[in-house]
Length: 484
Image: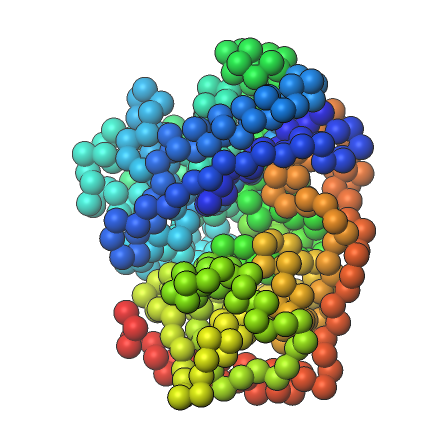
């Protein structure tokens, strides 16, 4: 058996697979996000441990024999979070999360230094880790002076599981401190932000062992002591491993809290001016590009909260038949936007609302707005030298066939729906745990799932979607500066 642990923004998931990669059991425990000020987004690292205890504890209670048979553990987690650790290995403050934009001014300052784009291959986005540390240095100097280590969220879980300060390449590439081509920390960039190399965790590849399970936790869960814990991956790279998106040209679209258009690359292809991320993949000698939008299902869930009904009820009102876009245009920039705008201060907007606009029209506009933001990402990937011929759909939003029809039609490429199964980040983490524990060939483990259905573009609606996309493109510059 192999265990995957995925630290998500809203929950921790624990998933067990067997030697044949069949999902045997899973459990999850919820998490909350604190937003003490506009643009802030934080979580208490202690809550991650409590949620992991609950999820693994449930497996221990319901599947003790299978948990006892675990021979490898893999980790996945949301990226960019600044988890600041003191001399006692305890957090010094709440973790500043990936969708926190308080350090937008610091990010712009770092991005103006050409060394950052040259070495990391990326814009310094406000959500990345390095500008958060500059913010802490300026606004919480007493905390900054006590920092022993800076860990990414999943690597704080690793510290608790193993006692080791270790990270891996895919997650570390999102800090603005990694020389992404060389797959190593850059002392030059660390120095530029007032940090030292000894404050960084050691680096391994995602398929390598990054610590072993502590004996006290093993005893508590009825597991063998010394089970290897793989380097693992950031959530998107872990999802790619789970979907088998590891070879050049393979791609997926993720409709989770955020939205991602992800393409695996055999080589390193940075083009930071496109606002496309160029990161290390979880497998050695591989990289990936991705466009990221900050609010995908998050936008639909926001609309559901305002409407006072569930997101599934809202989408059910629309049915599954694709129709031409409505008159209402929605910008899904509830937390700012990354690709292609790199704009932390922009906020969302509806345009074209009239007396005839009802709840269903607003729901349609929200789905279309996220779709067009993903189309923005496709155009950015093309500008960065990557053409996509099809994508696999993943994430909670992919359960909406209507949404996938919108995406296929707007992007102009087929969208594959995998056969029933759990192929997300927790599954990818379990695969990495398997590789680290057994030494298996990553290519033989990271296969693609069978396709249950392919959503083709609706040809006779593509013109209408192009027209609506043009309205979407015109709206951002029209309101820029008016929503900050």
